[in-house]
Image (cartoon, rainbow, N blue to C red):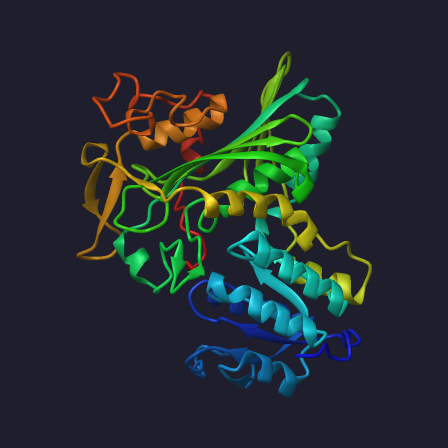
Length: 424
C-alpha cells in the first residue's frame, strides 16, 4: 500500500478506533470510556472478530464495528488507534495505521521480534505519526524520581538493578487463545513467555530505572528459560543483561508461584538500595545513616499522555525508541534454545483459580526469584538443581530455602492479587 496523506490534524475530542476490545482490551475500553467522558477522545470504531453488545458499549455511543481494521480506519477517519490484539498481529496493524496517518497506542510487547519492531518504527517514522508503547508502568512518576535519586548519589555508587516477579497462571490461561504459551504459531513468531508478555513490565521497568532503554544501550543478554507447564514457551525464567555502560540488570520471573505477590525492582547501591513495587507506584529508599523512607507516587495514563502530546505540549512518555532495549531482550528470548521442561520433582500440581482447573507450582520458586533480585544472580548461579548444566540431580539443601533479604521482601500489607487487568 502507498503511504496515505499523512497525519490528520489533531482535534479534541480525538476520533479513536480500538482494535481488540475483549480480554485485556476491556481495560482499554474502560479507559477510553473515562477519557470520552472527559472530552478528550471519541470512540468511533471497534475492530473485533465478533461485534460488541450494547451492554459492553454502555456510555460509548454506537461506534462502527468491523473485523477489517484498515477499512475501519478509512471509514471513520480516526486520528488515533489503540491496538490490543494478539502479539503476532501488532506489526501489520501498526503499519496499516501509520500508512494512513493514524497515531498509535500499541500494547506491549510491541512486537515478537526485533525485525518486526523495526518494521513498526520505520513505518511510524515514514508516516510522520506518533506511537506510544503501552508499558503503563513507565507512566509512573516513580521512574524519574528513582533515576534522580540515583544520579544524586542517594544510595552511593550504582551496583546493578534486579527485578523479581512471582505470579500464578493456571491451565486455563494457556487455553484462552491459540497463541497463548507459544513461541511460534504456523511459522510465525509469537514469543509469549513470562518475560516477554505477562511480566514484560518487570523487564521494561528495570531497564527504565537504570536509564538503559534504547537498543544501543544493551551490550549482551543471557537467558535461562524453563517451563513447568505443558507449553511451548517459558513460564519460569531469568535474564541477565550487560549494558553498554558496563552495568548489570537481572530479571527473574515465574508464573508458577507458591504465593503470588507484587512484582518489584531493586536498585542496588554501594550505600543502600531502592525498591520499587511498580504496579503500586510505591518506592522504599534504604540508605546508610538514614531510616527507611517510603513514598507513593502518582502515574500518568499513557493514552491520556498521547492525547496531551498530540493536542498540547506533553512529552511523549514511551516512544518506540525507548523500548528498543526491551526488544533486544525479546530477541534474545526468541533466538534462545527452546525452554527446558522442569523435571517432575521440581513442581507440583494444585487447584487453580477456575473450578476444575489445575495449576503448576515450582517448589521454592518465590524465594529463588526474590533471591535473584537481591543478589543479581541467575537460577544456576544460585545453585538451583534444575538450572545447573547436565542432567538434573538431587536438589541441594539450600536450593528451595532461598529467601529474600528482609529489606526487599514485599510487606504483608502490599500482598494482594497480582493478576494484571484481564489477560491478553
